[in-house]
Amino acid sequence: MVNYLWIKYYRLNIVDLSNQLTNLSGWYNEDSIVNITVPKTIIYLGNETRLAFTGFTTNATRYVITNNTLILLMDRPVTVTVNWIREYNTSLTLYTINGAYVGTTYLGWVRYGEEVTNVSINGITYELRTPLIINGVNDTAALNAEYREFSVRDALGLPEPFTQVVIKCGVQELSGVTNAYGITQELLVPINAVCVVEAPVIGYYGIALVIAVFLIAVLIIPRLIRRH
Image 1 (cartoon, rainbow, N blue to C red):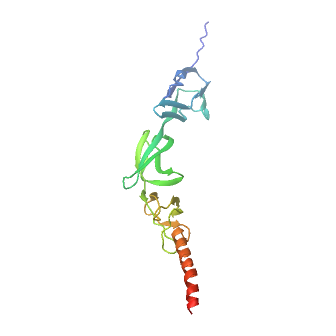
Image 2 (spheres, one colour):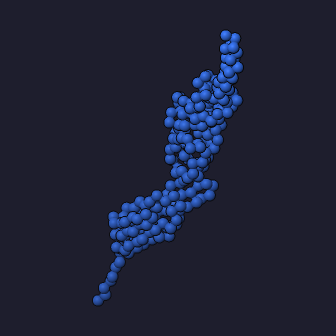
């Protein structure tokens, strides 16, 4: 009498864009336990592009996922997809709403398809004219901003030259220095923002005027008194 022993096998199919785990695909004994660990969760492709591991998808009925490890029971044919997303080390060339060149800002690693609605320049946040969907390393965008200069006057209505001023436009706070005419350099200001300039009450010209009036008074008043 001959007894035949049979072992049931199930097929494990691993879909892995990074090709790190495809060698684990194959036939496994029924009820065997398979440990799948992604060795590298970041894969650099060059040209400022990389793949970032985002998790597993599987049709297994019994499994446990911990970070970059999947442990599953082979009680049926199983497919495991290792999920990745493309990321770009993105930079944006920025312009004002009027088309004036602002500069280049670096966003760092950003996921493909991510929406960017604002950028930070020198610690100040500016909204983009139109939300930008990231689909590459380099792109251009227009800011909801424009270059403006401000004429700064003191309480006497005189220009305030060579003065450090603070300009508050909505929630943004800018700083600048006036020239000899009391005018700031061009500052990047959000459009439609109501701006308030904070400066000394009396500037250099105002101080000079007050001193001049005082000196004139000192010289003239004694003469008037002597005449009377």
